[in-house]
Length: 131
Image (cartoon, rainbow, N blue to C red; front, side, top):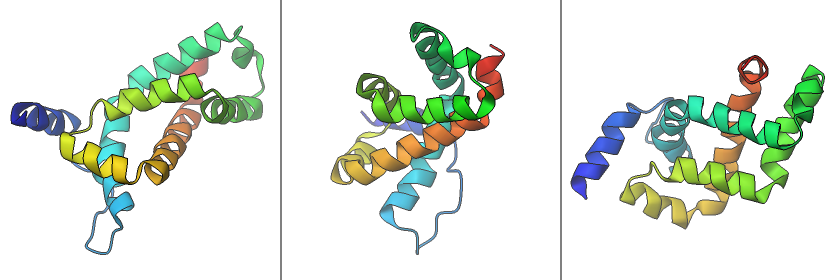
């Protein structure tokens, strides 16, 4: 088990953002775990969203820029199957200790995770459109 943990941590890289003694557990988890995983999984998450948009009759690609941003958020918040699939791609790269911490605070961490993912996709909407 320790080999998996070391591999995952080395694969993800260093934490992103400041982690101080004053940081809450959720903020620390966000910067040590969630941000590096989202960065690592970025290309996959973009492709997954593109595939989702195509399967939804490709209407996303006809929207104006503001509607595209709203569609990204709406899709992740409203489509439970899609959201759970995205969560699985992120949770699968947790260590066992991180998973333990996650299940203690899953509600607030899920909210952080999805909000960060939405912002990441929205900030790269041009990559989604031009793919």
